Image (cartoon, rainbow, N blue to C red):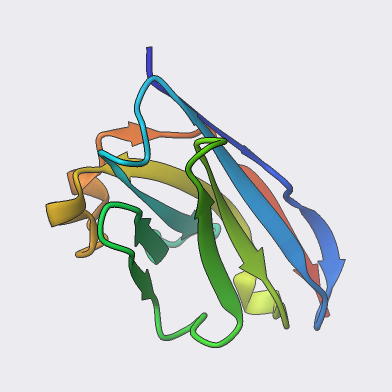
Length: 125
């Protein structure tokens, strides 16, 4: 059974930092890319960042570039999203998801096969 479990969400003031973790089981990071998506109330699901351990590829949405950093620990089968300089606009439920590397970089939700349950991130002004 494939499982992705997010942790590390919470409430933080603007300018603060949080680190999200995505613990993956049932598949390996050698075979799958992991993406982070977010969904704010009343909005669609937005691709934030993804990483493909097989080739070292990373992607960031323009809205988070320079503030967020994605990384992976293949030994722990875990992907991290370090979020710095958080803004109220970053408030959303954050999901991690797994996809084949050759389609993951487009960050289209329909291309992702497995999803976590989501973690709430709230940034107060």
